[in-house]
Length: 482
Image (cartoon, rainbow, N blue to C red; front, side, top):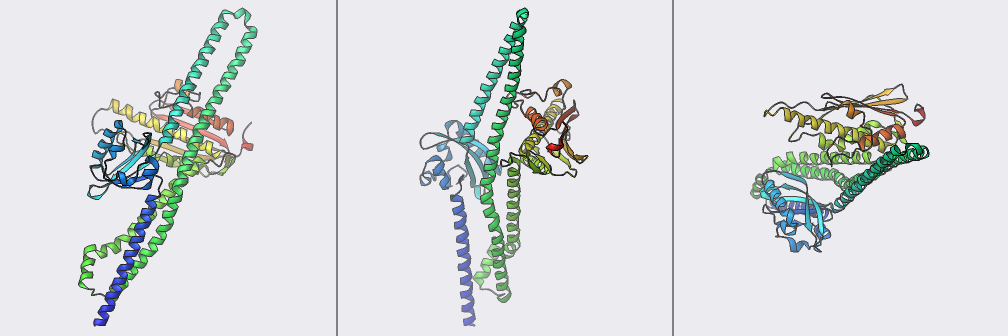
């Protein structure tokens, strides 16, 4: 009996040592992964004092992490953003999570660094989160605003010059036969210049967006593949450990009282039941992230500048994935329902990235129209608790006579009067307030469909009922109607 007890005791000790070693190794790998992230990962107490910082803090802001622990975050914030952080800190005491809050931090050299904050409340009041450097994006946005302002000034200048030339023509009508011809040539040049400017602005915007999307997808893809691959092994290792525990319980049903006390303390039966569910949840989560990355890469299509065969449904689904956050339910409106009625389509030869941008422009405009409908409804129905209208976007595809396809994008938004509908494809024409629309989206979409793909883009709309866009493009450019 003493020999068996000693053997059992030794076996239990070995199992404990193995579990401790495996847990220590898992914790080491997790800390190594966190330390090597490009984003700043931090933890702080409920009062905002740092309790953990990874190496990215030093790489981004220049401060040594050891010197910053137990110091409040607002010590490193721009003075104008400290109240914002204190408000977020108060909010985190009641809300579970905060995402995408932009804050200005001071680099150790006094340079201003823009960081995007995401944080969540943990158990016992601890707060964990990440800070992503968005300074480059902020500089690019400022440069783009300056370029747009300069472009608008140039357009206004050209319009004023054109008006002055027309006024001069009226006063010199007798001598302007030759001059009129030159003016017409100049107007044609100005029109072509405006179209060229439109294309350049859109090309630059899409190039930056495509590179940003592709870069994000690439950066996410590597670590998520690492996690996804290791989850499979983790499942196997955990199952092996659970089998070992089951064998131990089967052949040693009466453990030492200390062991039994520990089993009761950790609720072993619950752990055995819940641990596989937890790893399965991790598997589902990594699968979901990989699908999102695939959608981002499919939408950007930076490597598909030439004509090639593609499945249009993949492009539409990728666009919907990108716009998913705008389709979800929000505080001031219900979710937007997307009804997909996909027909059986052949692969078509096209510029995939350009068609994805057309889908993005049309669906974004439909979302804008639906949000405008909600705002209009609220202004005319101020009664609290009144039923909000249903918001729908219908996307229908159909093959036509085996050589072309039709795509309908239909919304039940505010619609638009005929005087507006007749001008929606004009460059720089927009009905949105300043800062929300440039008037380029539909104009560029029209050029992409008609000039690049030799198809057609039509619009019909009824005020108060909604808007319908119809895209018709050939399966192959060689099959387009001349």
